[in-house]
Length: 259
Image (cartoon, rainbow, N blue to C red; front, side, top):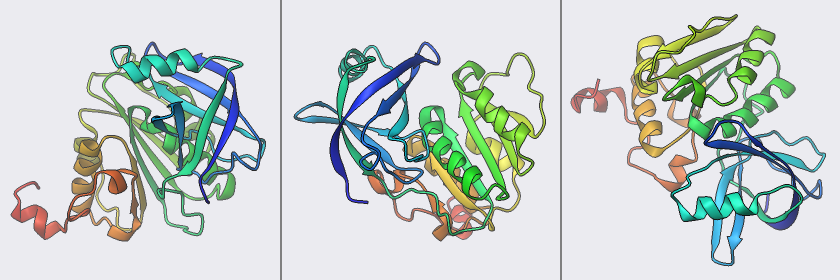
């Protein structure tokens, strides 16, 4: 899709945690079209456009959702919080990004998110459940504490409602109360460590990762040692923070002493 610039209306703003808020936007249906996994840019001023993953699959009704991390000490974050209020109009540029759900693939999905990286993954899950409800999905979502998994209830609902889906929550601090539920598992530690300890072979999976470059590449290195297919791994990080090679071979990992 060719990116386009448009004005849209803020229809709802909801605090999900003290640090994360959800924004619902409405505009012309055809102008709001996007692929699951893409992002938009929000205009703060003539020189400043801020990117955010679109946290909802395209439904054709002209609405979409964002999950925004608020950093009070950062000037742009404070300005954004002042502008994003109900009934205000915002200028957007969308869609952007090539990390989109491959709807022609029937391979199982391995989805890995950290923090508000869940926004991008949420759109992918929604689209997959709608278009191919039988496609297996393993969702891994990491945060420091359980309270930072700001839409845990939604991820739990997906897992409990769809036999083909499992939800893995990963926290650095032991969750309280302990985690339980149908097709729901809890892991403690870093996300890359949790993947290394829990998975055996990912060669048959399509892998999508959303988070910081450090988190994404740490996970890529683990998954490479578990048979990751380089042509079937996707992340926006590969575009804005590339490294060589993006996906090392198992032999490179062994020589480097990382695994």
